[in-house]
Image (cartoon, rainbow, N blue to C red):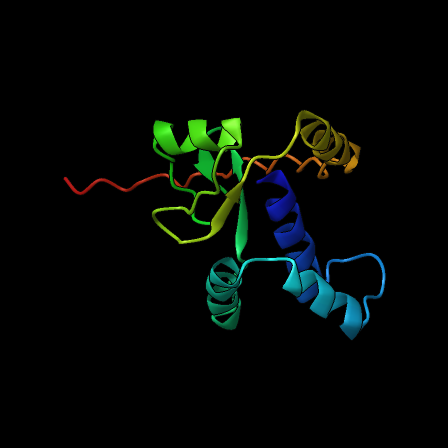
Length: 132
């Protein structure tokens, strides 16, 4: 199942122009031929709607729709025995390896921190005239 999911991830990177290298039409067709027709059909329906076909699962949450997954579906993903669809958004779910997670955390740590905002000046309050 990991092989199928990695092929889908590669196809998604190509479709959404996230792949670092140029891919020819022949390579794309060869990749699409390696994916079963049922899986490819569902993936293509999502892409036609402008959605990504795969979503990463972090902390038992689908990153596509931000909904929590049932524990059974999450365990199946961790075991790698079957592919799973998100019940909410319909994307294929993918749990990254520990090495990929550490790489993403390293990238996030390398980003510069936002500039600190300067403290606003305290506002002067006008005295309230009381009506007697």
